[in-house]
Image 1: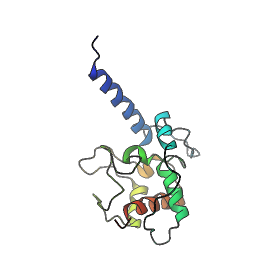
Image 2 (image 1 turned 120 degrees about the horizontal axis):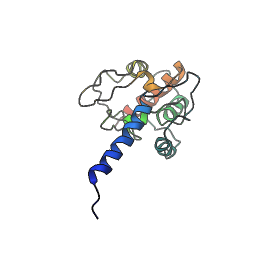
Image 3 (image 1 turned 60 degrees about the vertical axis):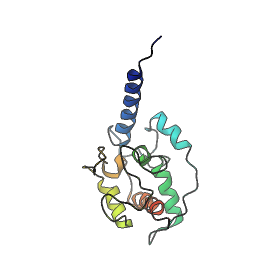
Image 4 (image 1 turned 180 degrees about the vertical axis):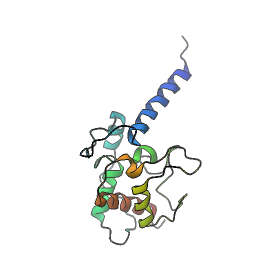
Length: 163
């Protein structure tokens, strides 16, 4: 019996595309929906595997470890409808869709806390090569100003580890 590899790859590609479209604002969201109930089952399962402890990195001025922990939860889809991990990876080290956020190299901007907040708020409608997936404002989530600061503090902490 012969199994079509192309059919398997196509099905996998379709599943990934469905997750990305959902994560990157491809579906309608109610402004009051700040839960992860709309997260696809595969994304929910992946988020459940995230360790609860926030990484030990540098804190931007005005941020607290509590903000970093909240930002970690948002990044990994456990709070506020955040799905950052879908494009940037569970370890934030990037995927073919979006770059790593866990190192000191930034394709655009300087990696400052202010820059990261602006990128979260504005998104990236025209991604920098080699990435092709645009980032909608707030990653497609409905974040409060404090949640934007929290997820930005998390990203800052993992990209400013002193290593």
